[in-house]
Amino acid sequence: MLENEQLFPTDIPKCEKIEYIPLLPQYKKLINIQWIIFFAILLIGGGTFYFLNGNVGIIWAAGVFAAWGIWLMLKLILIQIGFDRKGYAVREHDIHYRTGYFTLKETSVPIKRIQHIEIRQGLISKMFGLAKLRVFTAGESTMDLSIKGISLETAEDFKALLTQKMMIHD
Image 1 (cartoon, rainbow, N blue to C red):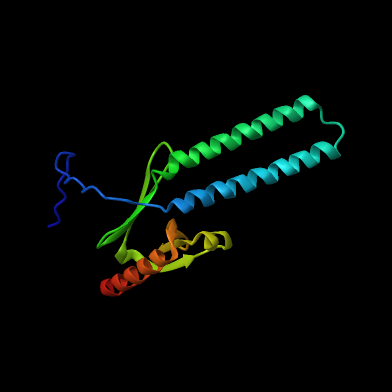
Image 2: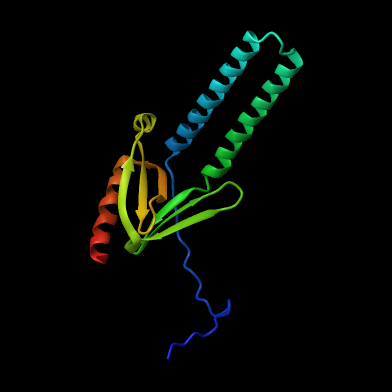
């Protein structure tokens, strides 16, 4: 007969503390540069609109520019806050990624559920020597875990390790 005993919080074994590996500092530079480029494009677009459209008042334009500056500063501050909280860990049976600004989001994927792994490296990421490790699991057509801000060598090493462990679990 199937037993289904009730568990209480005091009965649940405590999870061991995971030691997360921080992302490379170059990744923070990359994120900052990407956002500065985005905000520069917004500024150029807004400036072009202002000079081509004679109906826009100087007060309205100054307000938009002030909002743009505040938004840029807040985004750059959030990057600084969130970056130090990001990290990853690969253990014997699972892989973890942690991110978040004010609250932490931790994603864990058991190795036995991994279907395939890919490494991505964009043009700017390549200039910084960075890569993204993407992990896909069974039952979903979307990626379940993406670790950005690691070196290409580390991504390749993890892919080889995880691929080997996936074969053992088959």
